[in-house]
Length: 383
Image (cartoon, rainbow, N blue to C red; front, side, top):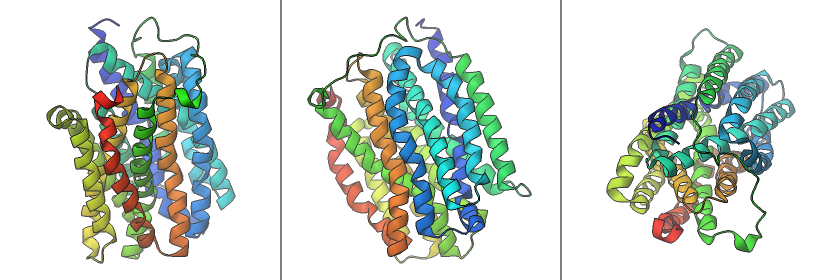
C-alpha cells in the first residue's frame, strides 16, 4: 500500500470498529426489557442466548477461508447490511424459541465482519508500521457503549424503534466506510493456504487463545448480564438498569484508547497483567456484600480490566506469519468470541440454580488463570 494511504485506512477501519457493535450495544441494554416483555426466566433467557454462539463459532471458521478469496473490504461491505437487518430481529421476538432463532441469524452474519475487520487492522499494523489495534478495539467498545446509551436514554421510543435507528446507522455507515477503505497490497486476495494438522498450529496461538477465551468469557457475561444484575439489585426492570452496560463498555473503551500508549510504555505482558488484575478487583466489588452504589465502580474496573485482552491477542497472533494470517485470526476469534458468547448462557444456568451474584463469583478462577497465561503475549515467545 502507498504510505499516504495509511492515515485514511486507519480512520476508516476505526470507523468500522465503531459501527459494527453499535446495534448490538442497543440489544444488550434492552435485554432486561425483552426478558420481562416475553416473560422469560433466567434459565429460559440463558437458553435463548445460546443461539448466537451456535451460529457464530462455525461462521468464524468459514469466514477465515472466505476472506482469502474475497478480501476483508469486500466481506465488510457485503455483511454489514446483513448484520444490521439481523440485529433488529431479537426485539421482534415473541417467545424464547423465536429469540433463540433470531440470535442464531445474528451470530451467523456477525462472524464475517468480526474476522474481516480484525484481519484488515492486523495487516495495516504490519504493512504501515503503525500501532492501532488497541485503539480499534477502543472504538469497538465505544460503539457498544454508544448503542447501549441510545437504548437507555431514548425516551418515548419503543425497543423496535430504537433498534431500527441503530441498525440503519450501523448498516449504512459500515457500507460507506468499507467501500472507501484502500487496498493494503496486491496480495489482499488469493487462494486459501493448505489446511494444517493440529500439530502444525503454533503453540503460542493455543495459549493466547485460551487467555483470550477466559477474559472474553467475562466480557460476554458482563455485557449480557450486567443490566439484569443491576435491575435485580435495584428492583427495577426498566431500561435504567442498562446504564450498567454503558459504564462497563465506556471504561472498556477508555482502557483501549489508552492501550497503545500503555503498551509502548509497559509492554504487552505488563499491560495484560495490569488490566486482568483490574478485572478481578472489579468482579469482587460487584459480588461482595457492599452497598449497591459500589456495583457501578465494579463494572467500571471490570471494563478497564477487559479492555486489553482482545487487541493484545490479535496483534500477537497477526505477527505469527503471513501465510496463515486469516486462518490464525479466525481460530483466535473463534475461541475468544466463543468465550464472549458461551459465557452468558452458562452463567444464566448457574444463576437459575443458585443466584446471579454466585454465578459472577465463578468468573474469578478463570481470570486468575488468564493472569498466569499473560506471559505468552511476549513477542519473543509468540514469535
